[in-house]
Image 1 (cartoon, helix red, strand yellow):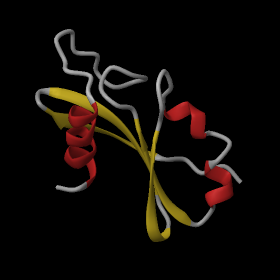
Image 2: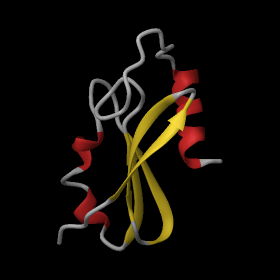
Image 3: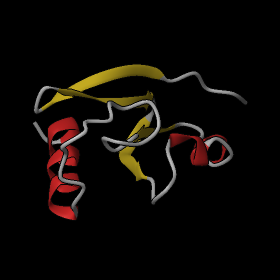
Image 4: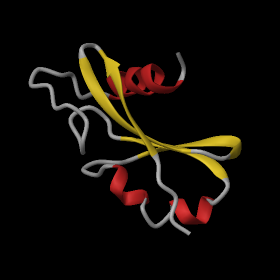
Length: 88
């Protein structure tokens, strides 16, 4: 079964983070891609999580998110991006 996500752009430090939200119940799965990847690596996993709420996103600089030129591509910055999209 194919589920269509709700697509959002989450603003962070003046840039947009691309987010896909798959509606469901239970605890939310937040899937974070590695490098050099993006949300497309989860296309085959999403059907296996049928009925569960799932959020995938592209870190800044990857996939459909903005690609700022002078951005600090560090784990601390990626933690801030995660917080901006899902903890506020």
